[in-house]
Image (cartoon, rainbow, N blue to C red; front, side, top):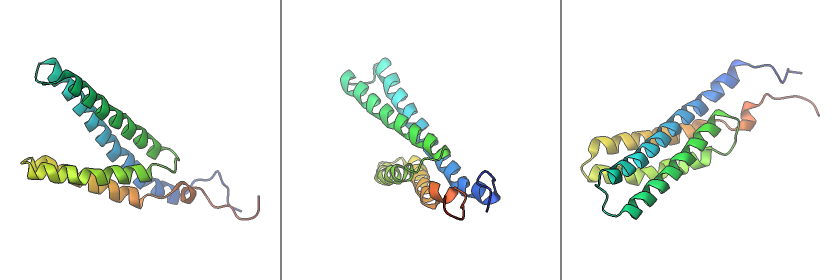
Length: 140
């Protein structure tokens, strides 16, 4: 009977995509938090036309940034749930990237599309928690 506390190389390899997914979602979370801070900066220097709209937009963007930060943290642990929100968020970024490309921000749009595609692919390639646990033969 294998030792359930023993680690082998397969569990390290299985965690690789989870760590990459954590990194990529963390980058997206930091980007959103930076964008929220930029909105507030624009308001502080007088560029915002409607202060209430700017503050509420920054707050909403910050909520999504914190949410992605929690998803990123979940990827580092043994949580089984971060795959779905990561894929859904990445899917939502495709029209945003396409809109940026059409709007003249080609470099940023392509970077966003590459980040979204990479994150979705890594999330799809990640193993679930049940496949990370060592198998134990026999009845418990």
